[in-house]
Length: 294
Image 1 (cartoon, rainbow, N blue to C red):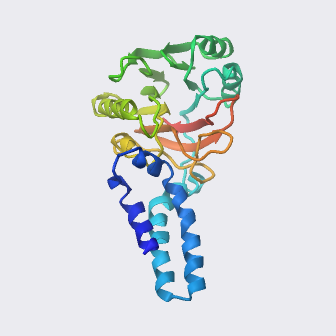
Image 2: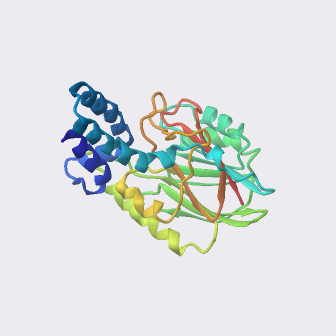
């Protein structure tokens, strides 16, 4: 019975009610429920019940179908880098961490042409600019987000996304291969008892995708939503997120012991050649580094 309940919970997680924060917590931890499968198998083996063993294989199969395709190493099938590639580095640098300069230095050392930062206050923005401005001549920032680029930034604008304060921006990157739309996002915080503002922000953000005129587009930043969060589906139904180069879930938070992926690069119109996480500065979020063929 427990095995079948686990299989049903995994397969039907989108129907878990959004009351008392149950759905948010459940979907944030969804991949970890796979750890229950070996326990159920051991119980079945000790009971010497073929029925119990067979039942334990059902959630194993469901978990495998849901998650294995997403944790296969990208390196097994990644296209070769083309003559025009774009590397994007992004991190929530954590307000009041005092390590904006360290994060900016580490991200610039990756060779990224675009660096997106979130959760900046005025001091952190100044610290990051002091590191990045010389090597990245084009920049734009608003509210808690900012972007530095080796390529010209055109049509930059703030996005309030219905929240009344600015935690997002949109712009065009004038790359050698043509315009690429960029959206940098710092979604509102999500807590079990308070995630309505984040949900509204993600829903409004998803409306921009079909209206964007550029064939190539990516949204990057801290979405404050795990990969299986139902409120991210409006974006992931339209945009794709690549597997990690070396495989695995690519969890980004908390940095000391990552348990979920809150930071994403979602894109259309391009091929991802590499995708990884890294420690940068003293933030509680890992940075994400993604290279795309233009």
